[in-house]
Length: 233
Image (tube, rainbow, N blue to C red; front, side, top):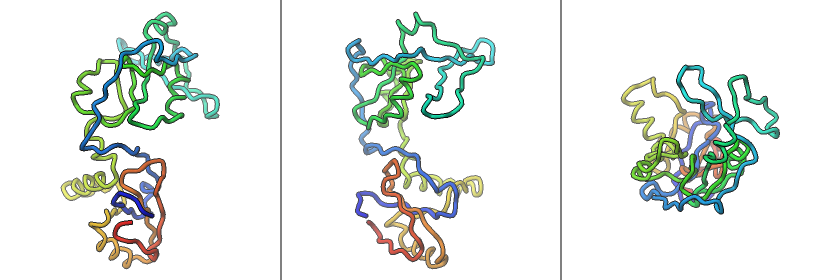
């Protein structure tokens, strides 16, 4: 299959290599510095529920937002004796908000989770939670104590499969068994000869082939030792 990425190929014998949860992101050398407009009533989609708060078991510690399972998950609710509703007046004047940046795909599971748990969707800068591409450090410096986002600078160092393996391999050489946390991996085309030699040594093996910067299972393929693999496909 043709693609624009070098492929890391992992041995399928390890349970850790059976799935992938990374998100496809823009070029890390050119992270976005988001220009966010101010929040306004016209840009907000209100939730129909009050946020749930989980009281801390420690004295003097503030409550945290609780994310409960919606009915369609057919999963036991997380509501317990420590869970309280956010004060309705506070929720009206200071609603919890989230924003999905134009630089990323809008996933319904993300939006529905926040709406179900009492957040208001906004396109403005007054968000509490931002889903976006990796930011520049100076962008995070503008956050207040109540703002979070789903990425941070340098996330490509473990978000991309090739960079993840390079970092793990480097730490494995330095610290040994403490970093034997993933299966043997080869990055094509640079590791092609070593990969082919490994397949010849173990003709009954199976390998998981993945694009380095894709998501949602796109491009993943299981190949046997006898399956022809080109240096770059």
